[in-house]
Length: 380
Image 1 (cartoon, one colour):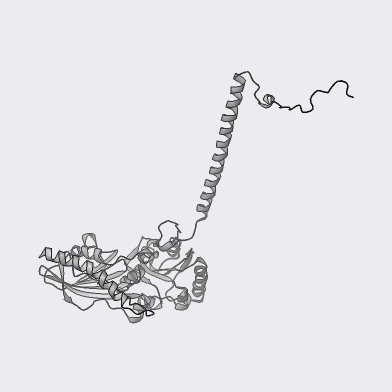
Image 2 (image 1 turned 135 degrees about the vertical axis):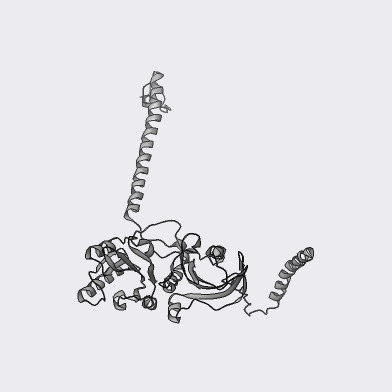
């Protein structure tokens, strides 16, 4: 049977080009040829690890139409899986990039969900509650709802993360703002990431849209802090350029003076490059100032940025290049002097050893043709 399949495969491989050639030859001149597009691979696999797909299911990921459009949702999939008496429904939604997946993750993470720990951690970020596990990996958000009678270990879904789509280039780049947050007193389950007005409103954002100016394509991270110095909200906004960020910071400062920001308290605002940070709520003035000044933007230039993307150049990098050029010039001048002394000095020493003058100017002989000859006697 295996040989028959192998033989059939060979015949098919030989016949396919011939059929394709014949089909192409039948296309009349002047008419466009038909382009065949291969279907995209399923978002969720039919099996992974010990789990086997058993049929379709009802998705547990629900986004409003406006929010889904804002996050650039591209496709979704949901399947029921079974494994050794266990059952689970897996829902997956793919977005245009990792930022959309992370934003959807923070939006759908409910207050009762806690970060996964130890061997129960999946993907980049993972949250779990009774009867539900939520995580994101690459540009995909995944929700797992166990429905069997036996306890389900999150580690049994590790192979699922490896089968999810792997975005390339800038589409797979993780958001910058979460990496800039001060960690002392941070309530990690409170993080909410927004990329537009609808997402920000769904996250419970308090800043007026006119102050943020969503026409400038900002990305907003809202986080809550709790500690001895008070409880409040830290809002960090990432703008495309430092110039836009400076203009928006002045707008926030004006709103604080006018008292148009709700629950501002002893609010403090600061800017670092294209990032604007606002600490408001129940913080003391000192703690609020400490939080906003703790947000630092550092531009790094590397050779492996996706799709040619490069951040701002540092002045120190340019200075380093100039110093290297100057060192190279000095080395070349020094090498020229050394070679001149070696070759010139060696030749002079050799002539001196042979009893000749150091310079070879005196060795020059003038060749005379004596064309005038000797004058004849008697001719005057």
